Length: 419
RNA sequence: GUGGGUGUAGCUCAGUUGGUUAGAGUGCCGGGUUGUGGCCCCGGAGGUCGAGGGUUCAAAUCCCUUCACUCACCCCA
Image (cartoon, rainbow, N blue to C red; front, side, top):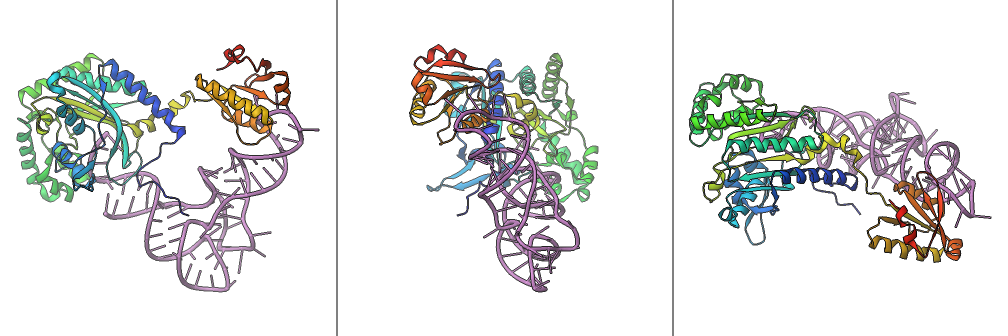
C-alpha cells in the first residue's frame, strides 16, 4: 500500500521543531503584551469577497495565488492568504469599534498562497500578525516598528535591516500614480512584459521589478517622496523622528512599494542577507482606508506580519538550547510484579505533574537503561523481584552514576530528588 | 506559470570505463555483562537504486518519458 503524502508546499512541523515554535510564540506574546496587544483568533476560511475587496483585485495574491473553491452549499470561499482582512472583518462584525475604536490585536497562524514552493516560501506558511486599529498618530507607526524590532531581537535575529517609505494617502497617491504612468508611458518599449501589463493595473509595482532594463528606467522615475501631500509629508517626518528617538536604524527606500493595495502612508520591511531570495522576514504598513473599504467607518490602521518559518530559519541555531522536555524519572522494571508496580507508581506520579517514562516493551534492564539515557532522563528507578520483596529500590542519578536506596512504600521520601 | 539542479537504507552519503549477492556512517533491535546507560567490540533487521519504458549478453550507471524534491524567476512574510 502506498503511503499518502502531504500536499505540495504543506509541511509537517515535527516534534523536534515544535519546541522552537513554542519559544518564538512565547516571546511574541510577551513582547506584544508589554505593548498592550491582545490576541484574537479568526477563522482560516473566509468568503472570497473579503480578500478581493481587502487586498485588491489586481494584486498577484488575489489574481493567481489564492486557494478558492465553492463549498457544497455553493458559497465561494478562500483559505486566507493573510490575516489583516479577517481581523478587520471580526473587528467590524462584533462592533469592537463601537465599544472602543482603539484595538491592538495580534494573531498567530497559518496562511495559504498557491505559489511555487522554494526556500522560505511554502503554500501553507505561518505569520505572526499585529494590527493596531483606531490610531492615526505617527508616533504609533514608530511604536509598532519599535515593537517589531524588539520582538525580532528577543528571539535572537541578527542584523535586521529596516527599510521605510511613505506611499502617500488617497489624496496624493492618485497624482503620483498618474505621474508614474505618464513617465513610463514614453518608455513602454523598454519595459518587460509584466511591467507593460502592470502599467494599467498597478503601475507602482514596476518598482518591484528585478529585470535590469526596468530597474534602469525606474531609477530615473520620480520618487514618491516628492509628490506627497503636506499632511503625508508631515506624518512621515514625524514617524522618522520617533524612530530616531529610539535609536532605530533605518534606510528610507523611496522605491519600496508593497504587494497589497491597501497600504497608505508608512510602509516598512525588515530584511536580512541570510535568507536568499526570500529576504523579507517581516513587512507591514499603514492602511488608513481599509476599514472603510470593508464596510466600516473611517478608522485608521497599521500592522505588520512576520514570516514564522523565515524567522525560524534565521534563528534556529541560537534556539537549540531551548530546554528539551525530557522526563524527570524513568522507571526500569524487571518481572511482572515489578512491572505492574512501576506502571501504577509511574502513572500516579504523572497525575501529580511529574514527567515519568517507562518502557512497556519486554526488555532487559540494559535495554531500559539505554532508553532512559536516550530520553535524557536524569534519574532512573530500578525495580525488580528483589526490590519488590525488600520494598527498597535503587534510584540512580544518570549524570553522576550515584545510586541510593529508596522506599517503594513511601515515594514522598525521595520525590524531592527528582528534576 | 518559466528555467536550472538532485533523486541509492529512517537520516547523511559512497558506488570506478555498464559486470556477478548494491555498500559505509549514523539511527533502530539484540549480544558481549544470567540486574545497570554513555565508550568499545560483535551480530541482526532495514533497499522495487523515485516510477515507467528503451538500448544491451548484462543497467544504480547510458537514452527517453514522467513524478517528487530543491534552487532561482515571478510574488511575498
